Image 1 (tube, rainbow, N blue to C red):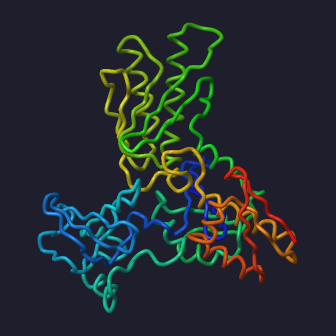
Image 2 (cartoon, rainbow, N blue to C red):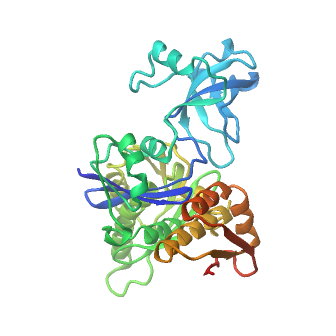
Length: 390
């Protein structure tokens, strides 16, 4: 299997696609705002929770991490004590990261001497691994080592080479890429999509589970039973791909088109299990419920793709995601008109993001352009903005 990574590096945000034999299987947005699973931190115990046999640990994240007793000697930890932990599941959906005090072997870091050397002279909370930078964090999220990496910004090639020393890394503008990354991002955020051969999928993410509904559409010929079976089998392939693209995990409930009899249901279950075989998360098909839904469980490790792009419980892009889109657009415009001064006309929510969490990337872009960028808050739809050359 040939593995490739395509990286589009914008101000303060990298967008990336992971390809297996030319097919995009996973998408990533990296802003340095979440700590990836696999990262090692020197944390501080804030509070022990006796009723849960766990400890809450400050690793420098917005939310405290959760360290259960089974993942470390919690009973021996006093409040305020330093502890070396590894992230097993990154923070998501309002929950802190799931931690473990048992460090998985990687480059000798599970060796006590190696860990002691990293910790020496440091006060918690402080990250120990990965190294600073988007490339090192992205490396932890990937399902393997890429053979080739294409990046649209030559300025990030050195960082990529440090994080992926064995990969063939080159600069190539997005117009020469074999995929349309912007279109793939939009597809991975859409609530509905067509199934090849007819029918459609409707995907809804909730705090408790991921709900997927399969619709046959309006078949023009053939029996209803045969059409339903064909759409369900095609939908199984589409569902397996969307679970990886969207980084969906936990309980997944699929409402396939209704079928009569155990034999056609078993064919759909087998089709779903076969479609999931290549998923490195190793999801499991649990079977049919009494209501006629197929249950799947996919281990959670990363936050859902939508969490970094959409407003909570909404299909609208977040103000922060739009702020980075504005900066990406400005960087693109500035390459073709480097002598211009610039004004960004955005909604108040996006302006607040540009003056808040995206202020650092805006300042870095101003430094790169050698001029100030005016941000003007206006009205209109939150997704609309204007980039004006002065």
